[in-house]
Image (cartoon, rainbow, N blue to C red; front, side, top):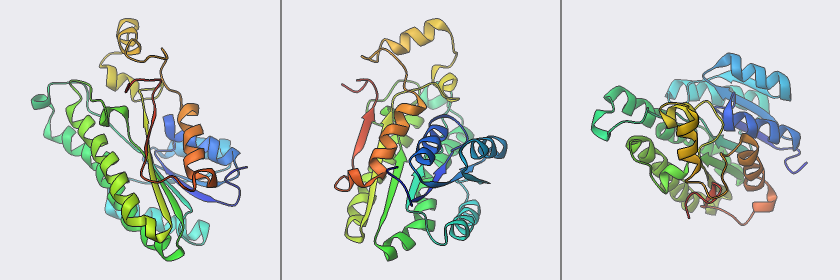
Length: 247
């Protein structure tokens, strides 16, 4: 029960790594609110875990403002923990062939959402002088793969944003960290691979020393640690949960 008495928002919590984090946070005693564009998925995980759920577009200022209003009403204030997990990618392609619409979508969800949630929740965390923010980045931001240029760049942005936020918010008692997963068994895997075939999986797995994809549970265990008091002296890190991929 390392998060007993804590409140948390997990964006993109209806599936994949986000759903794994919701399950782990709930098991550790946190009151969790899921924010997801897919309302059906969000409410399904909420029913399973006892969390609450709201439909939210975290790349939209009005959507994040509505999320903040719902969270303040549910938690009687700002959450103790904010997990920026929502993310998208573009299909593998030469960098100059990615459409402007796909580029805008990737940056809107992966980067702008972090700015918008900071604008919505950081002031109250600063006033309270406590809080933990966790950004779910990617090994792609540390060791980029070809043909995913703008996704790589968005996750590199997130890692730099994490460090910048950590330095600025440390005097206010707010910690900010990131997790960098390797590709996992989530809905995004097919998009990373381009086509989900045994040959493509084998080729990808050959680059991971531990020889397997990450799982939602792998990322959730790291998230619980970084958002708990066990990590009270840790801020500004980009923790690789990648089976050795970045070595």
